[in-house]
Length: 49
Image 1: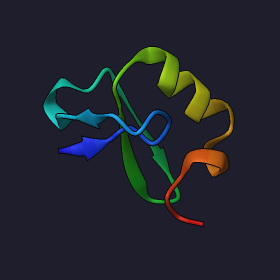
Image 2: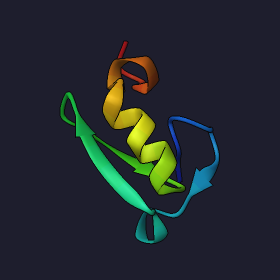
Image 3: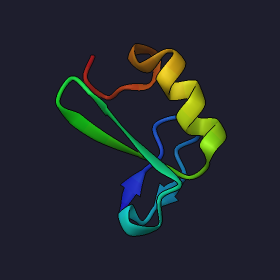
Image 4: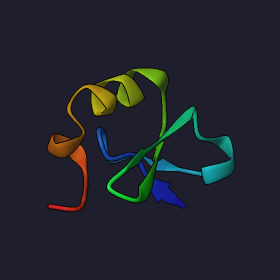
């Protein structure tokens, strides 16, 4: 299980609506809207701070 970095919803990696790479880490998303928000400002949502 992964957690969507935008809305904090649990996401099964295989059923994720999208993924993004940021600073060497893969992030999984519950929906395309969350992926879009993350892709616009990944530092705001990434867990590597």
